[in-house]
Length: 277
Ligand code: MN
Image (cartoon, rainbow, N blue to C red; front, side, top):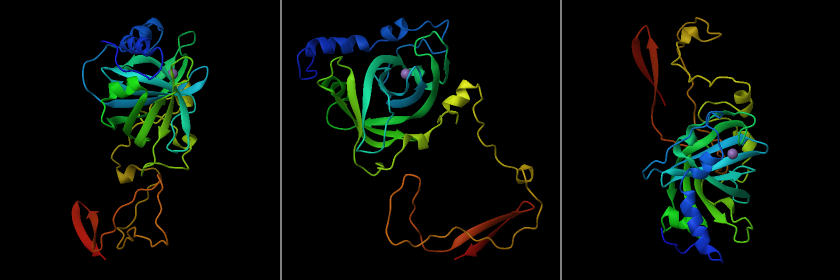
């Protein structure tokens, strides 16, 4: 690939060539011994997928690895403080070597003595869209990448901006844009745990298994269940009047439709619907 218009500073051509080599997994594989670590050796994939994953990694220093799928690999940044939904937070993100796509599903323990030794969980994952007129690769090479994340924890518009004065040339900032998903009260500690298994880093360290998805409940088998007569009346949740509207990421909002509620009772296999205004 010829040198393109890269970051607007000296060394731009060298930088572009650097990116070309970065789009392979050579550096990733050079650092690891796959007979010792459970991490995937990975293959470079073809495709136009747009997934992203954030792994929480208890290495020598705790950090979050922010990875986005691009050109068949995961472009990766280590974010010491982790991402934030608060637009006032500008989080340092240090670009590291590309990782293979299947790394995104990795959760486990990198053994002592191996590169990056420590526990890893899949802290968030989902898909992304690119904002702006330039394709993602060009935005990356220019040092300003605008993304909309559709994750389980992170949502909405973000920007990754390369620090032009960064000595090592690998320091970026990850910043949330102001939008409906922004949350000035965001605290990363309140959003811990793996979206893949429900585990924390401690759970992984202690070898606890992934929490099982809730099976369809058989009421009689639920702990503490008592046999009782069929209730004749149930109070459904009703909308509550408040003075002012508010936004809170812990809440889901829905339109209050006026009308008649149907309450469903299943008794001895027979369904009965009752109305409740
Ligand atoms: Mn890491």
